[in-house]
Image 1 (tube, rainbow, N blue to C red):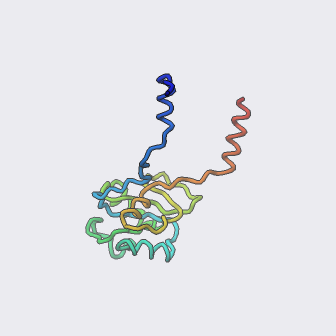
Image 2: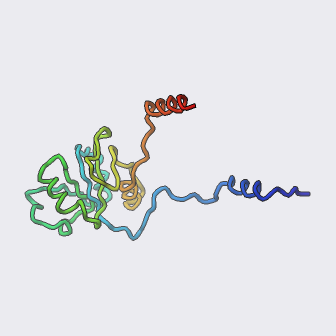
Image 3: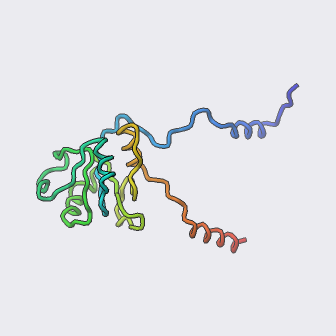
Length: 164
């Protein structure tokens, strides 16, 4: 014998069930073949360069070599542009900033600001090694989940206590 539950309780019970298949955290679009331009304001370590090289051709923007070349004529999978250099910033403004044909990510120190520019992703550590270039690129172009700061959490708790 089963007990019939009111519709509200039945609906709530169905919401509490866990889905069989979870959604992927990162959308791995196989049709996405955009190259990635990595703007930096800190040096990329040898290990990170090695990891990038394992997934594709890594080039550093060199103003002496690439000055009069359009971005689409430079052969790369990952182009590193150092925003600490004035001529590199000019190249960024002219060729990259408003160009939707490339993924634009920003490698910086964790305490640095974004300089008022918009990037697909800003990070202070490169993603860990992945099983494929597609998975690595998806993580590289996804905004990392920030670690909660204890100080702000404590201030939030104090603010809630003061409101009560």
